[in-house]
Amino acid sequence: MAGIKRALISVSDKTGVVDMAKGLEALGAEILSTGGTAKALRDAGVKVTDVAAYTGSPEILDGRVKTLHPKIHGGLLGRRSLPAHVDQMKQHNIGPIDVVVVNLYPFEATIAKPNCHFDDAIENIDIGGPSMLRSAAKNHDDVLVVVDPADYTRVLDAVKANTVTRALRRELAMKVFQHTARYDSLIAGYLEKQVQGGDVKFPKVLTLQYELAETLRYGENPHQQGAFYRELNSNEPSVSRGKILHGKAMSYNNFLDANSALELAKEYDECAVAIIKHNNPCGMALGSTPVEAYVKARETDPVSAFGGGIAFNRPVDLAAAKEITSTFVEVVIAPGFAEDALAELKRKKDLRLLDVGPLTKVKQEGYDLKKLVGGLIVQDRDLGVLADLRALPVPTIRKPTDEEYAACAFAWKVCKHVKSNAIIYAKPGQTVGIGAGQMSRVDSVKLAAMKAQMPIKGCVMASDAFFPFRDGLDAAAQAGITCVIQPGGSIRDAEVVKAADEHGMAMIMTGMRHFRH
Image (tube, rainbow, N blue to C red):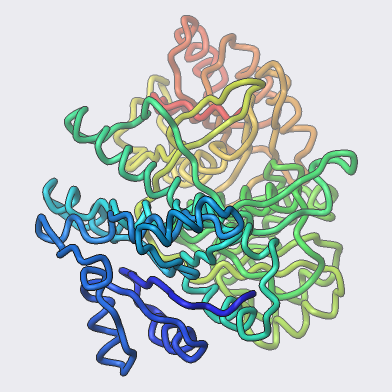
């Protein structure tokens, strides 16, 4: 590109800005700046011209008006290839501005502060910054515009080497409009909360901001294209924030299964392992060690566990790694891997190892989204928990034993992560049979018995929703179930409770449903 005569630099985030300014200055550019940026650059030895001196107009209204001036925006929007623009710029003594380095007032950080005052939020709405960015981005054929500090080095390198391409200019302009779009959506969302007088669960316009993390080989099937997007500023330990340590790239289906597995494992404070296949648990267990929990989980359904995804809520040690490598597994998700465990697992060339970091407790929030053709349905994530099972109604004659209470507490958490209709057979700390995704509840009851590889007699049964008829209880009793935990709420609850009494079963009514479609 032709030599840079003038650069305008005004940033809130000053990361790397001094080196950027010095690099532009070394290329012969006059540096225009304002306020705190100008001071930081001068303190670092950069020669700076204040925007007010350049325009001949002082900053006014407590600095609200600094760069909103024809000499600034004319210098940004004037097209160098149009003689009429060039003539008008000369007529009005407007010099071209060749580079714009701007990022915006920290509105998002301001409103994230506890007890943020409305006036503080309003004062952190940037006006001049977005205006300069948009002007420069619109005229990107003539103006290099940089909003992301991560781009400083490569832009400087391209300018020095005279290799600034149209593709680079368009990419930088694109990033500007992505940045300002998100900025405006944050402001609109904040103001809507103020108008509504508090938190807004479902905004009138739902704006979602995700960044492309990677393009996948394909989607659920090879004829579908796929991609993985990461939510901006999420800090909850998750598969989305995990780091691949080894193995093939994650597929669309790997991401689904890995997420399901980790979210189930996170339900427990005890050492836990979840095994997922086709987005349904096929084994879940607690143990005193990771290897014990894994072996117990695998025992539920070894056939389905083959080629599944495994999530640990403890770091994987060598003993667990050796059990994992004894069979075929697609992906292992964990909050860390011991060095010797990592070496053992890496013997499997294609085994994906995903380190999600410490499973620190943070506020769980956000939406559960499902796309429809032409629309979107939105709800809270299902974060419902039962604090104390012993405080729940027990309508049956027989009351649960301590062991049955423990098994029900364990099974109820698993139930939430199984596709409806969902039935779990379990003993304390271990699933025994899982019936998932059937159109009738009694079929899920029968499927759980059919899938069981261990004795069912004496196990408990968890159901994600109420029993519409007594047939589910009859089938469970025939399989050997002694206690049931279910939401209740059916018009035939009395009939269902009577069936439980006839079979000598205990029953806990949760009043909470866990459909998962």
